[in-house]
Length: 402
Image (cartoon, rainbow, N blue to C red; front, side):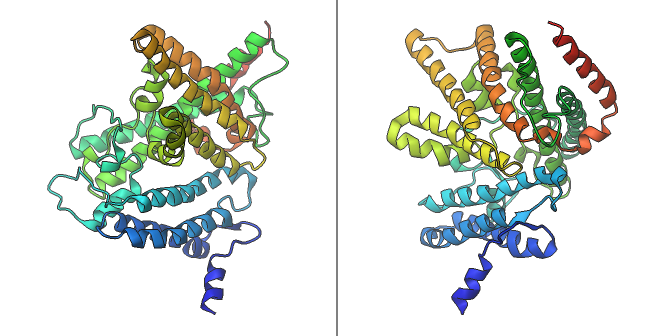
């Protein structure tokens, strides 16, 4: 009987069920609570055996939540909300990494005047993705702080930044959809490569769309980070030093390695290294570690895409992210052969060319899934949306005159 009850708790329904308070309590809450329990064990000495014994249950509960729930309430226009279920994958992988650590994880940076606390350290471990201030994030690049660190002014900067990036994101989102409202601007999706156009114009158009998409991702990421800062510093009274900048001016990157390793956000850096980098490095050394991290990124981005469109093909993400590894390795070979780093103006030209070239394939995967067909509150409140739509449509018509 106890085993039957236990198996019933872990049973996955044949069709996803809509999220509601009851289903949240029965599916999401157990995964979150077990996640925090493992975080407590991870910072507590002599708990390795407990973590090893407990992890399979944590992974099963996270998997059950990811496979059981539908955050869209059955409405196609809200399917993009299911991307949030990727957090369950993060719970499984992060707790596995904590489980395999032989020694307790150590926090080196705490708020001013704070006393060490197992519960607070566990909470910080659970919510920090980059690992700022922790011993497990060795090699993490932390951008230089330029914002005022007094609490009120820091929050004020976050409010202004969130508003500005929301506005820019709204413009970019409207612009991307306006290139083709009936294909990738719809829920059905489509390709950014228009086969009716000449080769050069076709890829010029797709590269413009891809660039807009990259800046939109940057803006939505920065906006989300700013919105987290406001309650964390204002209500939870966290120290502004706990919230270092998320990006480091990625448009100034002078090498592919500089872009991905320093200037782009490092939220999932440790996950990519743990899932792909470490395993392949054991077999193929440093080269395997680089390829493994980028291929893991490709797989995880594909999983996120599958949550909104199960028909997507894995190869697009694997090739686009795999070629980023090729770019990084090419730069290392150049350094070894010439003794000079890839940098400066020519390094910037090389970097942007490589990112846009393979970014086309990456963005094409997203738009084929209908990612830009979903309604957005940012899109609807952008006051200049109509002007943007008309301008982009006119530009698209002009491109077709060549």
